[in-house]
Length: 193
Image (tube, rainbow, N blue to C red; front, side, top):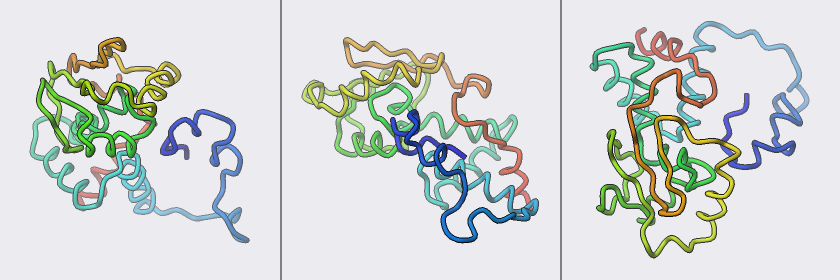
């Protein structure tokens, strides 16, 4: 399944999933019998790899979502979307989440006028994410901003391209998330065993 981990390459015909949609090797096209546990584990791995998290980080996000009021699976996805690296990717400053994470680590971004270099920083509604003055001439960032229109910007975010600034208008809602269709109930079932 396409996870859009390779940035712009996933939006072209060169995507590996489009060209060869089976595992490599001699036995790659064989039939595989998948159990319920296998489906749940596969879904957890998809979400974890899409957001670029380690197992311990993902588990802590799940338990934080489990303690909050509401549907655990939806709250988990909202917490993951509120991460700074995800916001930077959604606003189009980076071509992929890993590139966005690298840009944040190199202190290219300010949140409400303060330098932040932690990719897991939880952004709140009303926060302004902007590119530092020195970083506005970086070629990779400008190329990514030019290509953001292909991907689109979610309705819960607002981008001011000329000022290199983005605003978080509201919290993301499950229906507005443009991520690949995750079945978060399988993750909840996996961790509730």
